[in-house]
Image 1 (cartoon, rainbow, N blue to C red):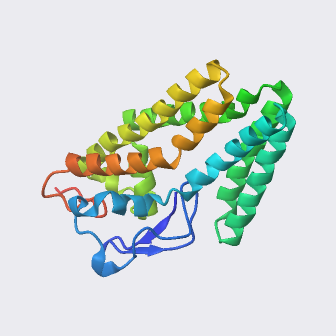
Image 2: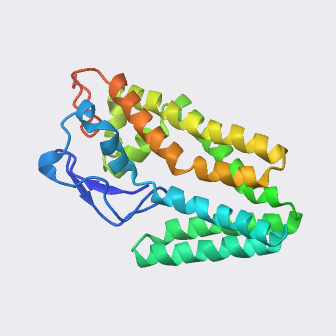
Length: 253
């Protein structure tokens, strides 16, 4: 997800180079201080999407698995050619994103995931094992988001608060902390859906189905998740709350 330099008092959103998964080089909305939303009800899913970043990286993540399955099918079920195709696409995407100015860490992490999947499938010889990394990371992500909600550090608040450079101010606002916890459950649901679908297809050794699910459950699901979590965030805040860009400071005693 992309980090954004945001003025803490004015709610300004000045863009810098994208960083992390789910980011893109193109801003989703103009960073015009005069148009910064005054409250969460005015922010809409587009504003939350602007903070979290675009979905291009999610699309990028789906391309190497698709390349793997296409090469596997065309080469008479050769996992070797599938792994080569996946790595070739992963390297090409990495080079393209680096040329766009994307941060090397995010690019390397994406490429590392493809490399680990390729090593696994080459060692096991089972094509469906190429998707084991995705199954494991989505299960781990679901667990991490649940734990973050339980310990009152909801990850949606951590991500958005970090992107807006709010430090810990969002956690000192009880209403915003509650809203982030409620909206974070939407993200838990996203990972649970993936784990459920991938598990069934993996158990059935449905390689083509896994590739289709990998594509269908990338940016379309992320887009829906951002929109729904933005709606939940707005609905969970009191009517008089200034919005997630302006956490309320606790009253001094």
